[in-house]
Image (cartoon, rainbow, N blue to C red; front, side):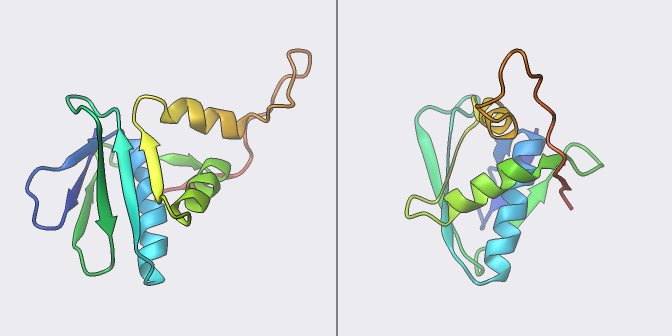
Length: 127
């Protein structure tokens, strides 16, 4: 599990490595542009309800990953999350169901049982 340290808070937000990889790419892109946004998550182990943080360039962040190698990210899911981060509600992730959401974006709804779906050819390596 990866950890996100926010501001001066000593208790990290704990999320799966690949999910935090997506969040890191979106956050780095938006903050580099000087864009602030909210990040809301729910379903984290040991947490009830949901939590939201305000991300802006002046608040220190540290991303700590268990894996030494960057995760392979789906370009389509990354784009969907980036679009969401630009909305008035900000970026919202459910830790329990994000993998199903990632797979749904990668597998078009029009794919049928007779036509096997192809894995996404657009992957992104999180830095």
